[in-house]
Length: 157
View 1 (cartoon, rainbow, N blue to C red):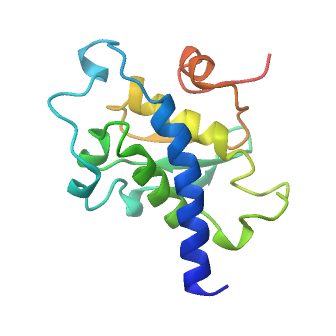
View 2 (view 1 turned 90 degrees about the vertical axis):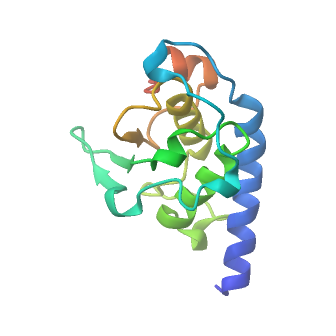
View 3 (view 1 turned 135 degrees about the horizontal axis):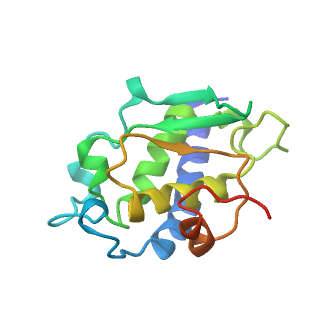
């Protein structure tokens, strides 16, 4: 796949994800430890949203693939306007752009991007100061409220 096509696909994925992220991300007061302080930096103020060297795919204790994200200090402070840029950086670094638009395989890490976006926005809303965030494609897409009710780890009942 040509670099231009790959960038176009990644940009489209980020734009689509960003539309739902921006609309879904609202700030809640869940105690001082989990709320943002001061003014959230604009997307252009973060040179990087995640610490790529400390982030990556791993197999969790139940044998499922999970993506460990370690946000930068700037990434932890973003508002809803910066969330699509963070998701774009995650996909750019840990996605497989050749697979976008094709049918998911059983090992496709991005088969549940909507659920992973809900998990990301949940961490930004209620757990932004956690040292690392796990985004897990096997967790169901249940929407923002149910994801938050499950402390960012939704499961099917």
